[in-house]
Length: 194
View (tube, rainbow, N blue to C red):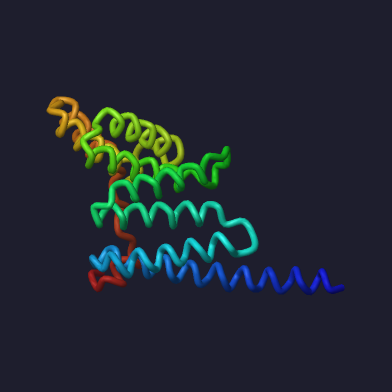
């Protein structure tokens, strides 16, 4: 009977800890986006500690938080710290599980961006190509995620003075986007344009 009660307490505690970690992570992202990098980093690192010590399986969550820590450290020009966070996130996501594909694409793109910043254009190209392939397979060729990655790779080509390749990707990016859905009657009512 005690083990049943202990498992129930651990599950409840795990949910509470997961909720706190999610709240801290959301705050870290908001602070990062607002340019408040030190509080963002502190909140993200606290969220990661909670996830690491919480009962249950939160590996994808840990990888997402590691990626966020990487983006914060990148914004702080701590490129070694960013690279370390991205490598940790990639190691966590190194599993054959379709549920981690979106997170893996994000981490791969973040790592590619870091290589681009550091002038490692060949490594950036290789990683962006891998992210594009994964995104096309997961989201489809017309997805905005794919278009964003195509744009990012085009920037790498531009930095490498491969202007024709960059232009081809820019054209592919715009050509690949799905057109927005036509507004429905209910959408027009909500916007006041019936």
